[in-house]
Image 1: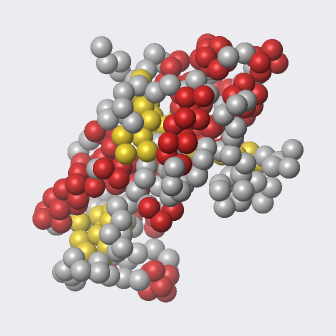
Image 2: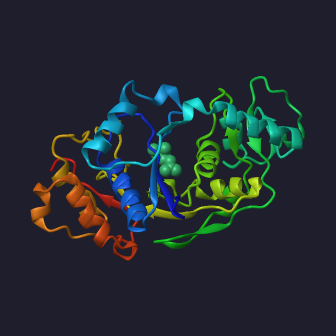
Length: 294
Ligand code: GLU
């Protein structure tokens, strides 16, 4: 029987799992399991130039080593282009989307937000991005931990890109179409994705679908405020020592795992986590600095 709650972890395989992505995996897993829900894994391999060969498999092996077992099959966005294109074609045909040839520079010169220049230009597909016509702006959304998050007006009103000029599908479009197709009811992810959330809700509206609930977890950042990433050498996490790292991830999420758990098996640690998980214990901040040297 399918349970009502469905959550997911949706990594981009740009490198191996690091502490920041482990926090998102653990937080979304605990929230789903504490609600007796399903927990899916989706590989967001939409942007080949930013991907690392072997990273997708490596991430899956690490999740397994950490006891983070998912339900169902892993889906790969690289195999779903036809679905994204079909939706874009439907919106182009109905006039809800249009081709745009404006350069980033031109938009910057126009004040930083896209003013809808190509709405009436009737460009052809060649050398064009595709933008969604935003008729009803999403002015904010309710986050389960942070409450109402307003979206700046200029951002909310901007016609945004759903397929890039280089032919790559936009993350916002793929995420929403896939979350709908997979029956996801709640999105638990890092706070770096608060900003695009308004656009994603806009896509649900355009599709006539109810949006999911959102819970944004604090983000692990370096001392100068940058998100942990391959670029700033966030250490990949070792598959051989899941205990201490699982406990560290839970501590980061505001929990207090007893020290003895560090040497316990992953499923015991996660079992403790499920029993003690409470959204109200999450730190109320959107970023927490990690000292990478320690
Ligand atoms: N693939 C995105 C990332 O790794 C996350 C997408 C999401 O959780 O909505 O940053």
